[in-house]
Length: 198
Figure 1 (cartoon, rainbow, N blue to C red):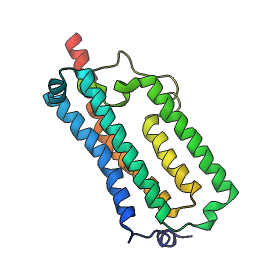
Figure 2: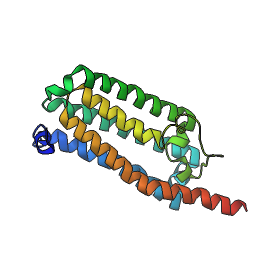
Figure 3: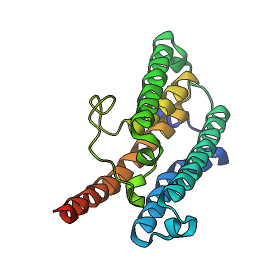
């Protein structure tokens, strides 16, 4: 089926579809804006009288926003028509593989990085002593983002939803845009630390 045919399987008249697009877009925008604001002003650290407490509160907010986004995504997918070819055994096996791999990358990343490493602790002045190079970072760059994308895609395929696949592609695109801003900024934070140490 051509792209136009696939798009015909997506009901863009449903508000739930656009609400999912909005939430997917908002979350990385929120954590990047708040993180940069904290890095430049230390406002949250001052408010909570501790950079660690501020980061933990920030992490709880971001995690909660993620739960809301995930719930809205599942509701949006449920409201969309199914595409029977995606219900084939091969696609469903692929869906399961995406879910397992995605969950493994996300969970192992959080385990290695900890709360502050996962939730922009370096923007709060909580820097890691060394770059993480073990699993899963030795398999893929940015395993949190890629793992999360695989979880969305796996769920969409499991529900035989062309709209879900389209939303998963949007998740990937938004994450890649976020990385375009995050990676140079984070590199600068650690470069500045190195300059001060010299």
